[in-house]
Amino acid sequence: MKESCLCGSKQPYLNCCSIYHTKSELPSTAEQLMRSRYTAYALKLVDYLVETTHPDKLKSSYRRKLVATINDIQWTKLEIVKTSAGGMNDKAGKVKFEASYVEQGEEGVLEEHSRFRKIADRWYYYDGKG
Ligand SMILES: [Zn+2]
Image 1 (cartoon, protein in one colour):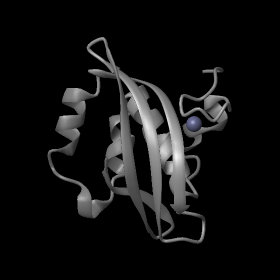
Image 2 (cartoon, rainbow, N blue to C red; image 1 turned 135 degrees about the vertical axis):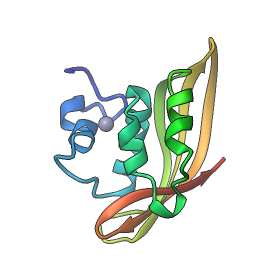
Image 3 (cartoon, rainbow, N blue to C red; image 1 turned 60 degrees about the vertical axis):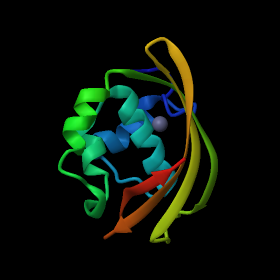
């Protein structure tokens, strides 16, 4: 895939979220994890989404629900609105984003404040609210 990464970084996918999807590297910031999770939704990488969800928040039904719904939504654009903490030396961080999508021919925008937490140098998605 030579085109720009779906996360909107303007970098080729192979130099961007692919690095995290293939586990060559771990995201060093909450924003990187956020972007790579968005791209994972768009590319329907269910395993990556399960693996990057915080163990305290991972419900046993999560994978089944993802598999059931992930094909219904096409993600079209990600905009990071604001980040707080979530840097290399932080243990937690927040990312506010807007993600555009098309579902059954209808366009929509998901706005979310996501929280991320780190366990042993690894970032996880903790939870989010609109
Ligand atoms: Zn990317």
